[in-house]
Length: 269
Image (cartoon, rainbow, N blue to C red; front, side, top):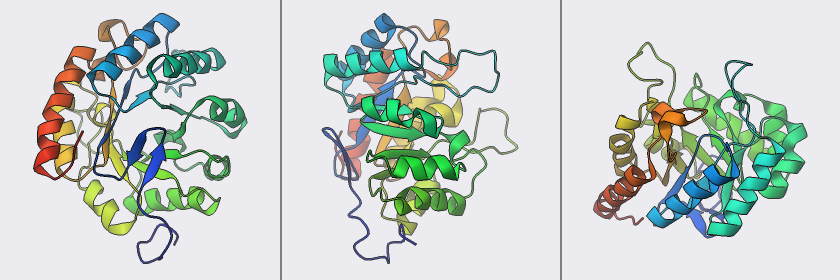
């Protein structure tokens, strides 16, 4: 298998996206809202997270939702706003692509493509994303085993892309106190099994903003190469996932805490 560490020369364990490098000594902090709601909203958050220490900017233009009646994103207009936010802040942009038909539009704007949990098993999209020439952030399926997760990454790698980052974002278990169960043991295990960088999304992993700071610290302590956090200036008014979103002020405090943890494990923020 391409991702296997025994496959000599497959990759060096680093993925560069703009000025951010996954797998290096410096951790990559990705922050931004669940979805792009408006130009003013996105620019406000982008500037705030840049000031607080974010390495990359996240924001959904196309949004997969459980309900067909929920906000589905601004689509192409959302991509335009993300491009403006990058120009304003200099932060590289990662955003989700939902289907192969969207790839040309998303790849024209995004610095990194995100394949979300719902699409981890979509082999057609995985291959298409791997062939488009952009780095790919692959999120673990909410019911996927480690083996299935790595084989999904294999589809992208087999299509010619070596710039793949894995993201642990929580799995479904019997527990209902949190949105998902954040499987932090996946981080060192994935690093044992592959040369791919691994980051953690504690926002989706817990579904509760109050738990995100602690789980972010734990993610860094167990060896994650970065953390992906949802940040919204007014979480109570968010059109998507407000309950798991940090305010920019809280994000800034978390960044300070992560610097201390990173130093303890030989990393920097």
